[in-house]
Image (cartoon, rainbow, N blue to C red; front, side, top):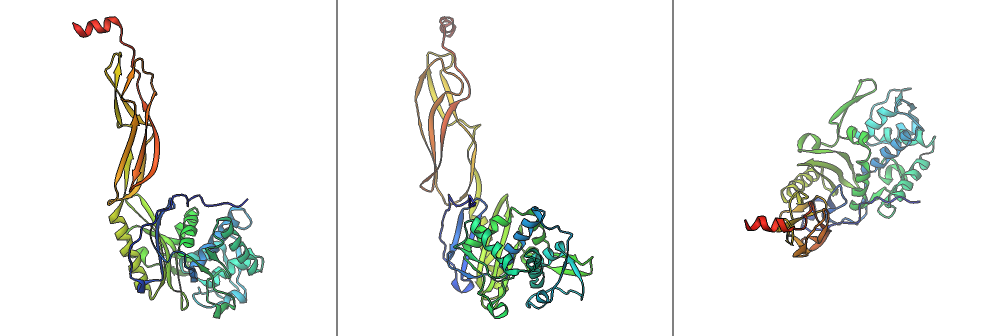
Length: 368
């Protein structure tokens, strides 16, 4: 039975005008599946090395299933050595560990490392590995948003195959899946590391890791047909976001788009506790009770990421008076939380204490 990422039920679309010459597609969303800024988000675009996100995830799936291990040593074939583009140096006859190949793929975007992983897991059949990539995309409900033909993302002129393509929305959803692989994200967030027993240094191609506050992971990509692409995650003030940019003319422009729109997002949005169990919502008169009034409270706390420009309203429907005795957890009414004109939550209003019926002696005490 196909799995679906359960994140698409509450997608919020808020438009902002952007400079189209800086990119072809842009999307910013949170980890709850809410999309806040987007442009051309459903337009398919060559992914370039952003493709390797899926390559690494498939590799970790096989590690989790114990089909392979991080310490397995992989022979680098002549096919892997000749893929071209960004590559790590591999001495003749060397057998690299799966761990080193993952690092080289995730940090340095090495095509020979990604190809070697695909060969090893596919038992010499790279097309079999690519089929797994597309099967996983289908399981995630992304079969119409991403399409894989290679484990590297290289252009057709170098592979003889169609280009790997995806939408900004598809890569956003794929990035949410990548966050479920903490070991991958940890490696992808390293500014630098070493492989081959410390003899080869890797420097992350994502320069934002060193420049921008809170950014971690996930993957950059570039070739002449794709422009400069990126999917990054960032966390500030307890809020994690994902930014996808496709088709920037150069690395500097792409990174500027990311930083400027992250700053805009965190300036505009914040997490606010909108419903608090500890704060009474209503006050109800009690007739014939030892107390004259009783308070009603919401059933649970609720907080949400909201814009500073959005209107927030709590609509309450409740009884204005009640006759004693009143039992604890008596339902007094209900509430609806309205944000920016839309209902986002509803719940019941309860008592948190009981009120006994007033006795004759209690009435006498009130008089005297």
